[in-house]
Every structure is written in C-alpha cells, then in structure tokens.
Image (cartoon, rainbow, N blue to C red; front, side):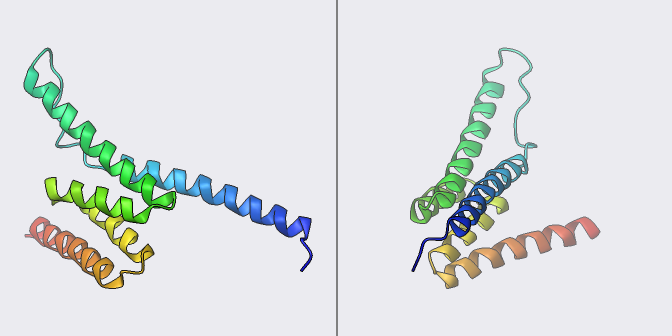
Length: 131
C-alpha cells in the first residue's frame, strides 16, 4: 500500500486537534473541581495554609490521573484516581474519570459500577435540593 501524503497530513491534523481537545478537556475538568472545600488564607493562619495545601494536593493528583489516562497510561491513572478516591470518596468528578479509565482498559464491569456510583450520588443530591 502506497503512503499517501494527503492521508498522512489528515492523520497529523487529526492528532493535533485531538491533543488540543484533550488539553482543553483536562483544563475544563480541573476547573470544575469543587473549590468550596478550600480554606481562605486570611493571614499567617497555619490551618488556612494547610487547607490550601490539601486542596492543591487533591487537585494535583486529579490532574495527574487525567494526564496519565490521556497519555496512554490508563493503569497508572486507575491507581492514581483510586488513591484519590480513597482519601476523598465524594469527588464524583474523579470517580467519573476513573470510570473512563476502566472503560479504556476494557474493564466494563468496573467502569459501569463507578459510573453508577456517580449517578446515584448526583441523584441523591438532586433529591435533597428539591425537598
């Protein structure tokens, strides 16, 4: 089969657009992390600084998991996101990204279980806000 330069150009263009899309998705996902849990630094208060450090560490682990998943290391992403969820079980955004990582490793049962946990959590939150 002959290598068609036009097809090669299209493939390169597609790869570049995909990388841009993945970067934009990762930034949007990181921006959607809840910031309500962050302590406001109102001076030299050690507790406020410690709260910021914990929130920064959580966000860094979340971004690392996304990066690992999108750069072809889904098993590393699973480890990172599972560790994050062990410490913060209510982070549904991280749980959803874990479901995607399981899906990409063809572990459909675990992917579905994680996605259902997200849906169950958001459904109970919706019910609470209505009542």
